[in-house]
Image 1 (cartoon, rainbow, N blue to C red):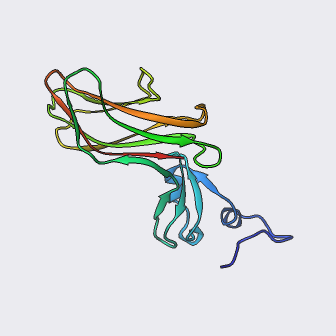
Image 2 (image 1 turned 180 degrees about the horizontal axis):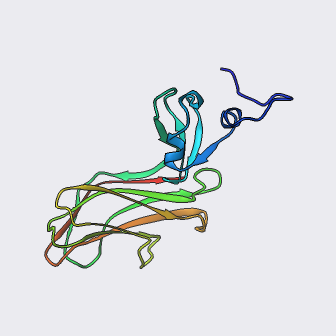
Image 3 (image 1 turned 135 degrees about the horizontal axis):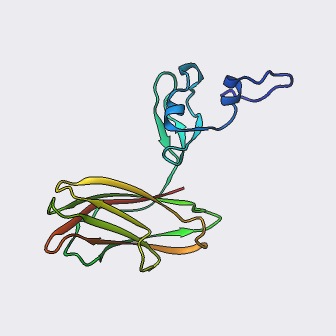
Length: 184
C-alpha cells in the first residue's frame, strides 16, 4: 500500500487535497466527486445523513458505508393496542470515553398500524424520561422502515436505557418487528 502524503514543494490542488484528507459535504456534492478522484478507503463526512462514510468500492462505483457502531438491536415482534403510550421494548448502551463516546443515536424501526385512518406513534425515551426524545409515526398498514436521530452529546458517561413506547388509535394496534440503535 502506498500512503498518500504531502511532499515538500508539492502544489496544493483540489485532487491532491482531497486524496490526503477527509472530505466533507452534502450527499450530492460527495456523489459528484470525479471518478478519477475516488479511491477505495476514502473517508468523507456526509452532512446530508450526518455520518462519516468510507468508500467501499473505487472507480466509477459510488458505494459508501457508514462508520456507525451498532449499539443494540431487537427483532422480537411487539404489538400494543390503544392510544395510551405503553413500553414495547427497552434497549441499552454504555457511553464511555474508552469505548462509545456517544454524540448521536440513530434509531431504525420497522413499524405499522392496523388502521390507515389513525397514526401509530413509536416514541423513544431515554433513561426513564417521561418525555419523547423522538417520535416515529406512520399511518401505513404494511410495515415501513422509519429512522430518526437523537443528540446525546450532553449525556454523561455511564449505562443508559432507551425505552420504546407505542400507541395508535383507540382499538388500533401498532406493531414493531425490527429495531436497531446505531451510534456515532
